[in-house]
Image: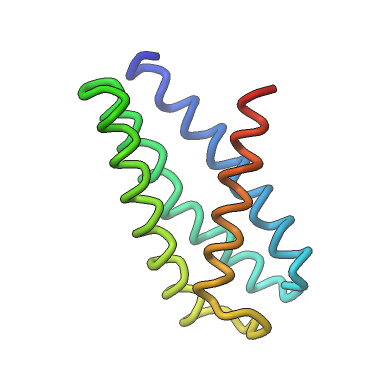
Length: 117
């Protein structure tokens, strides 16, 4: 992979993440359009960072740096998204930090399956 691949990778990852997380949120009975829109907005903010920084580390520092940065950024993202969900979502059936965990785990594992295909 080259750094010039990054824009395409970012767009692909963002679109897949949004689709997967909105579907999972809907399955979890998030029905308010504003809440679903906020899930989309949160991912527009957080996903590019989680995709681009580890990618840069992979290119410049190798696989180990990629993995460490990816894990660290995913953990930070869980808390940031959970905090934002706590502040903005009307949906209260699941703790917002648990919701963030479920959505992120779902998009990560489904994304891995898509990458294998």
